[in-house]
Image (cartoon, rainbow, N blue to C red; front, side, top):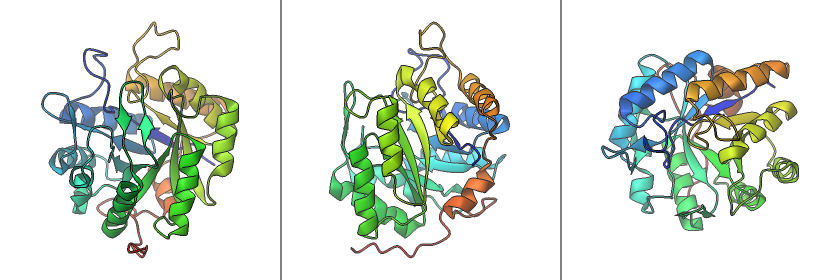
Length: 292
């Protein structure tokens, strides 16, 4: 299968003090995404920032970013962050799901349990996870399932049994966080083995683990999650700060070396049963039960 490239340009943590290359403003994010799309990516995982560079949840900011992208690229699959790292209220976390028409995101991120990071927790209670799933189902937006360990994958299977999630699924498997699955072959193998049937996946690594996890995924037929959200350095020795474009060009070289090709957005849209883009976005069907 062709290689999915899930581009994560900004995240919630990197600042201009940490690296001048992280895109923060609406216009910077738009320009970075369009540059990445020209190089070749499959989808983009967006985080919004406020006027003081702080993480933001408002639909209006996401709408401005999506509008700027789709003025020039109507095909790219767009995912918005519904993270619980900064915002705990359902009304704030679900706000980007209100966007409609040409501003409607195709996907919304869904972390499948609470996560402890180095200095902060991302709180995702069962009630919150299920409420976000129901809201995405009602809006015709597909969950982008984020799993930091095998237990989170098991919870996705539980949601599938409750008929809140329906295949096909898309997973980001993110390894190397201090309190979660570590970035080694055993953890990768267990998580990939445990995925529900009809799942598509990309492998990401936190910090220095990003290149290794990306390389493993490409070698074994998976996709990659790559960008400054997870890692601001170009090399594991941390001698050079990375640009998003450099990280994506390197992924292209590794994909080519492994005899693979980068998956185009249109191909993944068909695999995930998403609308075709070009004015029509989100999931094709909305028949999931949301009252279970």
